[in-house]
Image 1: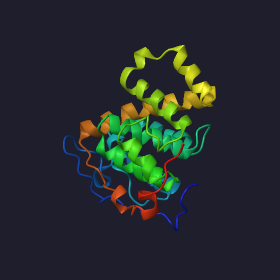
Image 2: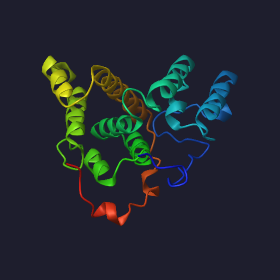
Image 3: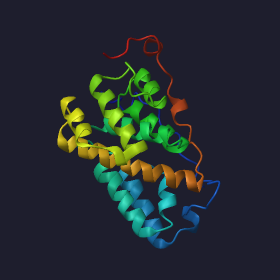
Image 4: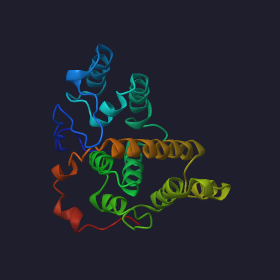
Length: 217
């Protein structure tokens, strides 16, 4: 079950000026009227006063920013045939495999906000799809996601059948592919620009009962 807004630690908003190590992003002070309008649209759509650094990367090409905001609103940050928690699990897992500290941190935080347990997150951050801290269905899902991320050319009908046998529908399989592939792009954009981790996950104080709690079957 997702954590309510009252229970979840409020994310520390990024400083207004995002510092990318390798290539400048489009900060609002230097943005065109078109980009400023899109940043304001983001605030209205998502209720956040600051624009994330990754969107400021995409703003170097305004049509790309428009499409990425649309993806965020229509697929990534909503429940679809996959629930939001499983999307955040995939996002965090792929980002950890790709060594993207910015995306790993922000989506690990979102995974916890969406109700993901601390032991499950530990397994995801360790890139361990065999962990008993996640369900059997999730183990199959992450094995599939790992194969897409590391050797997509080897995906075969047998991989789809394994997902179906684990209980995932064809539409859920397709959405898992889309989210996995999108984060292959996001991770590389963020790493190439040089965005640092926001360290959002540090705001979560892990309850002691979760530290010592039982894992899922």
